[in-house]
Length: 331
Image 1 (cartoon, one colour):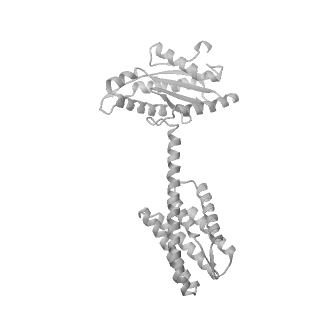
Image 2 (cartoon, rainbow, N blue to C red):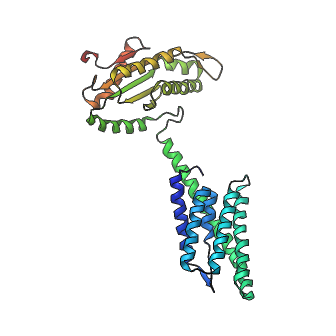
């Protein structure tokens, strides 16, 4: 239901074509053809709403008229319209999912049964045809719903695992794998002479937090720090947790002066922030920041990470709670 309009249109076309394929495998009875063309349309309404269902319906009706124009094609088109509208309406209600599915299939079967009585005069044939049609319609509809639910759950699981492979589960920031992926991509842009800045951030004396209050309280600090980093960085910056209490901010197309301002904003914001633990205790922490920039501090782009790490070490060595810039002797 929340898919893009482009995806809904594409799916509607696919469902309409599938309905036409089912018509090619229909059972002819006089001028009437018996098939399951309504099932793709019901599925479209249930899973995608009005847009794909209506597109699929239009294609299904058009395909029926291409097979033949007669009273049967007109009547079946009206039934297809009614089934589509009913399915769209019932899909949007608060009924239980099972009630929606069986309601859609039952409504379609009832209308089709009325059509059979109107168009087929052989009563003995109807005696066998109608129960068989209901059985096959319910069975194929049930199988189709089950298959799509399995595919839907599989896709959801795939998307979840894909996201988890690049997202740090504690802070919601990018993890080191995603950082490496983005950084390698940025390396290609260095050939276009774009500026690239990197902040390496480490919490000062974080071990004391864990030792004093416990690792669960330390996790609270890490989560809050992640929020601070996001708020201080630009929307286009790549904020990652690279492991433990170590974070990075990759600033694409960012000058050294601007990177210094962002780094200092992070440092001061963290210093002034009171971190509220689950126990109700407030603690204060500080961070040390190492900064490197291509091409102002680092001539070789591949050395940006190493230079930022060296600058972080220098910040730690010279007192912590400060921002150090790499290779300041080159500036």
